[in-house]
Image 1 (spheres, rainbow, N blue to C red):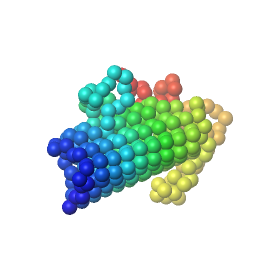
Image 2: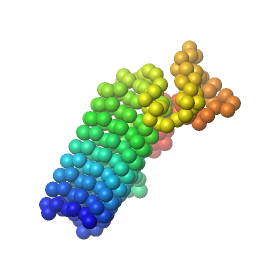
Image 3: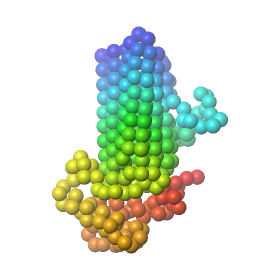
Image 4: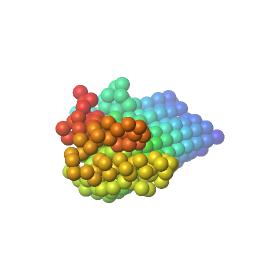
Length: 268
């Protein structure tokens, strides 16, 4: 049975699952679905047409699915959708925006930790098991792949892809794509420093797979030849595994855009 505080305001067309807890002064707008086992602390706002899965925790004063920040837009401007998966922890003062397109969608996957003051812009895709630390700002159209760990106050440019199980150090400014499994720091441009050993441990990859990642890292980033040539050489090898291929392919893809943001090649 759900527990709903008497001061909560819930639109008649909203759907509330079983065993949901909704705290004081929460607001859930029309046509929104809240899955079973979710907890909304005090003063949580959930916008229109939002789909929330099960067992998510929203801490006080998080604002989820309100209109994107666009010049000329107002509360009546139509926007797209936002979908949030299962088992996410969304801390205080987090903002997540829906798509700016009527048929578009912003997606947050499963089992992510999104810490205090994080902003996730419109049309982003956050996959699974990511940790996004305090005050990190993710601009629109970004993709954060599985297992990424962003330290505090990381700033991410629009259309950037952060590869799986990578790590960005605090105060990094990421304006180009980041390959999987690496540590980056600095800004404009950030620099790849090493392999994210802790990420490899979290990923559950076998010892053989991890050794292949280290071998590929050296071929990509520890050669005197240009990075793009190194990536092409890795992809030309026989029998490379999927992780080595992903590292090299990210470099190939990002080279297709003059500023190193592959997703921006699809920008209309």
